[in-house]
Image (spheres, rainbow, N blue to C red):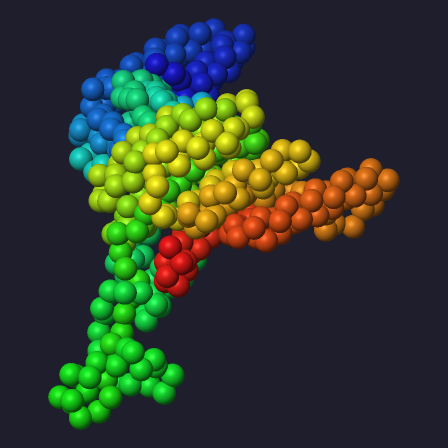
Length: 460
C-alpha cells in the first residue's frame, strides 16, 4: 500500500496541531484524535478500494511479430468490482524491442506507460473494459518473451494506492515482415496496389495462354487473327494472350559477411537500422508470396561459404509457409561467400530455366571481379537478376557539400565507392545480368515490381 499526496498532506497537518500544543496543551489531544481519524480514513479507503483480484488483465498480440515493423500490442484491463478507480499500467515488453508513444484508448486519448514516457492515469469503470494499445518494433528475428503487466490504482477516497503484478508473460517469435504480406492482401482485394508502390504489370499479347477475343487493331499481327470468330462476326477479330503461369522463381540469398552490416532506414532515423540480410529476407518472402499467388513455383537457396538451406521449387501457399519457417532461422555469418559452390549446387539441383534472383551486396576489388566471372555462366540457362542494397548514408555523403577538410575526404571516399559500384553494375549488365540497386527501405517494392515487369514482358 502506498500513500498518496493527499494522505501525506493530511498527516502533515498533525505536526501543525502539535506545534499549537506548545501554546495550548489541549491541542495534543486534538492532534491524537485527528491522527487517529486520518489513519482510520486510510484503512477505510483500503477496504473500499477493489483488491487485485477485482481486475482482469489480458494481452493480445500476433503470435508471429514482424521484423522491422510496428507490431500492435493490446492490453485489456477490466474492473470486475463495483467502484470506479483511476489507474496506471506498465507492460513489460522484451527489452530489445523499441516501443513508441502510444494511443491507449482510441476515444479517451490516453497513453500507456513505457520507460521513456511518464505514466498517465485512466479511468476504470465497473464492467467497462479499457484497451491500452501500443506498438513494438523488433530489431532481430528470433525467440523473445513478454513479461508481466503492472497495474497501480488509486483508492476511492484518494488516500492510498495499491499495486499488483499480473502474470501474463508469454513467449513470442519474431519472423520476417508479415505485416507487408497482409497489407498486400488487403490492397489486392481493393484493387489499390499502387498505394503501396506496386504497379500493375499485366501486359496482354506477350504470352501463350489465351485470354480473350477483341476487335482487330491496325498494329495487330496477322497470325493472331481468329478467322472463325471473324467469319461469325463479319469483322476482324484478334486473339489476345497473357503471360503463362507455372514459371519458376529461385531466390539465392547470400548470408555471408557482406550482408551483416546494418543499413540506416530513412523511414526510422531514430532507431538502428536492420541488417542488410533482414531487408533481403523480407524481400524474398514478399517475392515468393506474390509469385505463388500468380501460380509460379518458388524456391530458395541460402549460402555463405557453404550452402546452408535449399528448398526445391514448388507451387502453392504451403511452399510459402515452408519458406517462412526456413527464413525465420537464417542468420548471417562472418565468412566470405562462395558463389562458385552456390551456383554449382543450384546447377546440380535445378536445371529448368528460371528467374534466378540473387540477393547479395557488391564488394570492390578482387572480390568484385570474381563475382562478375562467377555469375556470368548462369545467364545462358537462366534469367539472372542481381539485387543489391545501396547504403543511403554513402550516397548522401557523396552528394553533400563538405564544410571542412574531413568532409572533403569523406566525400572523396564516398564518391569513389559509388563510382566503383556503378562500374561493377555496368559490367554485369554487359554480360547479360539484370541488376537492381535500391535503398533498403525500397527493396521489397522494387523487387516485386521487377518480377511483375519481367513476367509481363515474357522474359522468364
